[in-house]
Image 1 (cartoon, rainbow, N blue to C red):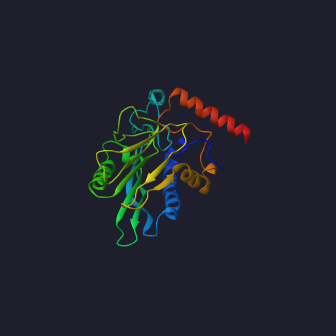
Image 2: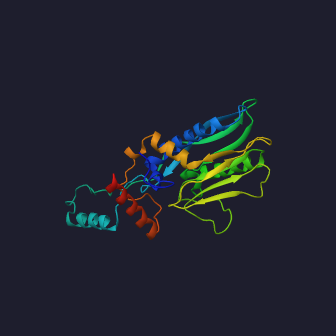
Image 3: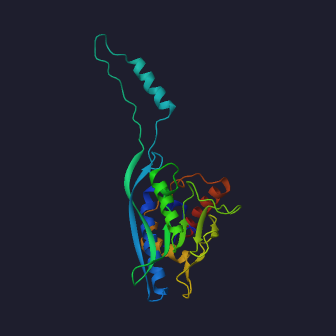
Length: 264
């Protein structure tokens, strides 16, 4: 069954879902690209190990609010310890930020001979966009290495949160795809994608003399979503994962889910 959204599905941004989608989307990119490449090229999916920092909110935990703390204090005052007894106090149960091991997948187009890197396709993860983290610093260094080399670089950003690479003005949308061609590092091609927009067809450049390959991201997304059966796993009855949507976008998401649920 297809996703209920015309483009990127915001429910896939949930920390409990994203890692699985990230892997499936990278694999779908390879399977879509490979048949359209000349025989001299190969596509491989690679991964790097990271420590993903997740907040209690991202983990779906409930943090005690001021009312919980006040109630705990009131119970402590109402039940003081007996004179001479050991002081026993009731703890406040809180949720902590966790560092969890994770994998980030990316796709490379290489030559069969000597495995020369021709195009790198990076699918951003939350830690790539979280300011002040070691993983973001490492990703930025890696991106600089790509841009200092002679390979083409494609950055696919399907995450609403985090810090985004500034590129152009007036182009901010919910999601974004960016292409840096090896021969033109001072310029980039950007596809801004709104929440209600279908995903675009983008080019994947190759070596000079070889025609670029059209990559239909909508088809890749559908292959990843339907092939892995995400409709069974995604909790569409729960609130949209953060960051919070604007009022009109949230209303559109709710109406779309409501209309689709009644038509199925």
